[in-house]
Image 1 (tube, helix red, strand yellow):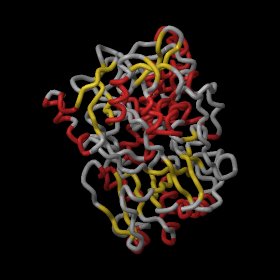
Image 2 (cartoon, helix red, strand yellow; image 1 turned 30 degrees about the vertical axis):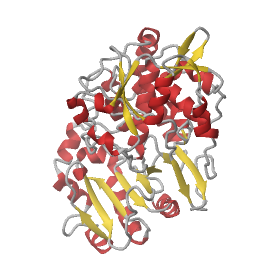
Image 3 (cartoon, helix red, strand yellow; image 1 turned 180 degrees about the vertical axis):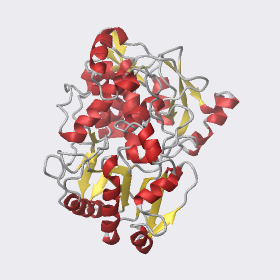
Image 4 (cartoon, helix red, strand yellow; image 1 turned 120 degrees about the vertical axis):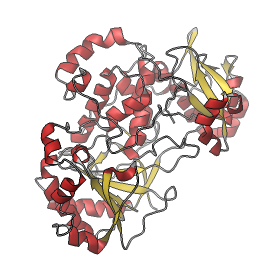
Length: 480
């Protein structure tokens, strides 16, 4: 589990590997779809547009074995991009347990109680996790971002202050999961593995752990969109994981031009456009089936409804399956009407749509929530028929229902994470992904000797989290 936080200042721009890739960057930026952001001619997207921005970079919490993201679906017949139900197989890892390791010398382990009082106060929510030990503080400039650690990780870090073999208790405690756990700690830069006369971690150690080459060419509309987003993020001169995650999250948003500002100057204009105000085309269907929600910031960037009939699953206990409906902004009005009509008889328990110009220009402008994958799939099948011919925008880092376009796709919100800081945004499916991709990408940029491009390493790192980066589906298992 990855992230980055500097307590006293945001880390400066990392220059590792810049000389080797500057010419390639310059050439690729000329034709990049978001080149105005690359060249600094427009303000970059911000998480404040519809998603609360963490006021500090995000915090990573390495553990001896990270919680793997697993989804459970029914026996439905979802057709993925390859035409069958996608089940992500385990990543094939080389056995590294016989190697020598050492604690990463770029970090200093500090017990939480030994942190200065102001830093303890900033990180107080970490103590809600009973397994927390403390933090790894980077030594000097450019050494990485702060990481919180559990007691098991802290013990291993202290043990490996003197390089050597893994202690026996590690193998005994984690059994068959030991190789994966150690591999994650090496890839996340907590510990290093011996290579020749030295030690390496992160992307520089990838060939010792994964052994596979670059991922295959991206498949389908959304697959190519996600790859473009990662290549764009790699080219940015940003060394803050939170900011970089925001760029990935908002990739493929239509620019908020003066034309769109004039068309949708406020919430009232959007409500009238969508037909949800008194006397509007969709008001009757909404009132019959749904209850309008008025939520405080930061959740007030949406028009939201909950079902009058179906209760939503309790947060943290059941998966929330999300159906993304992503029409081009010019076709939002017709698409929204179709969605409202179809949801009259659907098993959905909640849905939302952007309530201002920025919200209608983001790719994930309409989101419908379900308590089961079967319900989501049935609704998506009906929408596919009714929205045939609709021009799509496409939501990066979501699983497509069709390779041809990105009109309909899905994801699953992760469970609530214990010990998450109060000022950190609760991670949605895509934010969960973009946070991890951004952290891995920045880690790889600090290790310019790795065998993969930083964006390629980021893909392989999320694969270890049981995500298929070729289709952006989580690991799924039948039943349940």
